[in-house]
Length: 98
Image 1 (cartoon, helix red, strand yellow):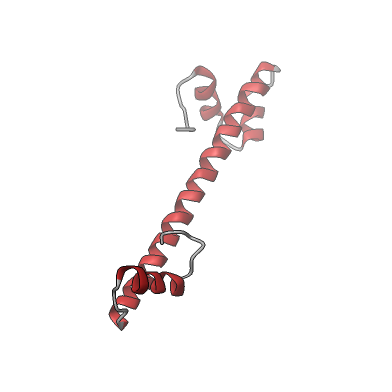
Image 2 (spheres, helix red, strand yellow):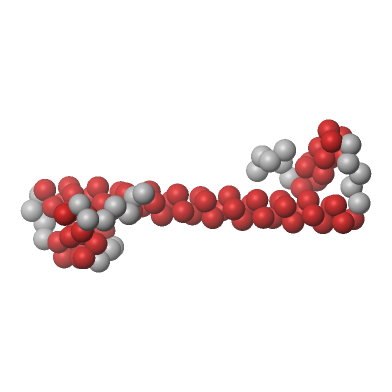
């Protein structure tokens, strides 16, 4: 029922057939609204996950580059974050992956 793979029409059919609820115009509007909200929540969660993954990878790269002796400013450029964030990562002060 809550699968992203099912369209609005399929969800309406499930509500009618499996739950015995007649689909009035008002109910249809609410189902469509619910579907739109759930899609928005899904997209927001996916975007947050991508951002978290990108920051985790940048932090990993910062440690690797630091081990190679690359200056903090150059690491910040490569990671596309501020030098302050790189310094905090390297000192253990900030964990942007959580």
